[in-house]
Image 1 (spheres, rainbow, N blue to C red):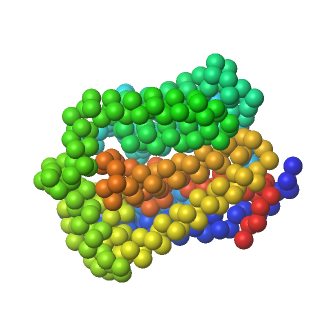
Image 2 (spheres, helix red, strand yellow):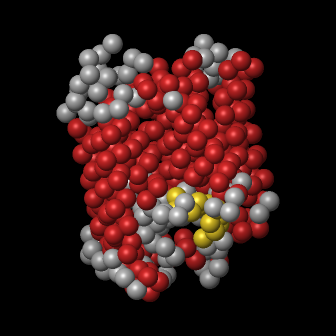
Image 3 (tube, rainbow, N blue to C red):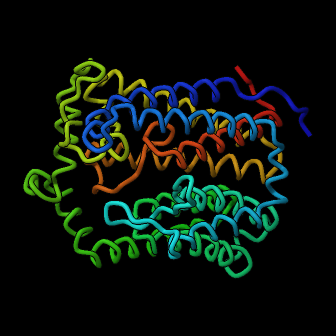
Length: 367
């Protein structure tokens, strides 16, 4: 077994830079909403700063917490995550903007879907590491994994959150692929997933209208095409160098909650193409180091866990950027480490801490 070493510095640096950019951009993009709704322009900044401090403690804790202990706790973590999702349907469940996806525990609210994502990744990595020779067998290996994926994603789709369901489903399927599932099984799952997505979109009028608006957003610019059109206006007006930090026009009630699901469009408007490219390069740097860590970890559980965390960040980042550039239909997906949201920021920073701990046991260049 590899000797325990220092964590991957490049991964840590790229993460902290993304969190810092997130704090600045949340403050800039949330100012109009904070003044209008909260009568305090610093409201969202203070909450994001508080979450980032807790997230830093989570990162440092998991960076020094042997990831192999997570294997022993995998079942417990998974059932806690599923249990938190069940709280949505109790009196503790809270509805915001027509969606019931939050739980109010008195001192704060949190989104169980974020717990379900990381809990599912840990549990599937644990299960696959125990049944590594069965992954190519449908009955013994694939079917139980599909049950895990079905329960995890099913609990999120019950919250009427298709975007997060797709993100988690793709992440867990990517872990199955890395573990060695058959190509034929992957193709069949892809076909079933595509059919399920078609049913989910066609079965709900607002999703069907969002898809129509995606095909021609300017034809529906006053209704379902409003968000993608305003996002494109923001990105287009940013040009090469941007309008300047704090000088976005679209954040003034043109884009709903620009500090969350459309924060990348505000980055493009204020910091321009070069600022957007810098953010994307930081994500590529983070993803590259995550892949390197997974490839250089001898322990199968560590490899799959690192792969799952990296895949989650990759897929969620791609979906967010695709939404704000109108490359896919609109869905509410925050940008990891940057968008406003305490639960998301804390759990993603904690997940990076797990990656850093895995890197301490891996044979790789730490520069």
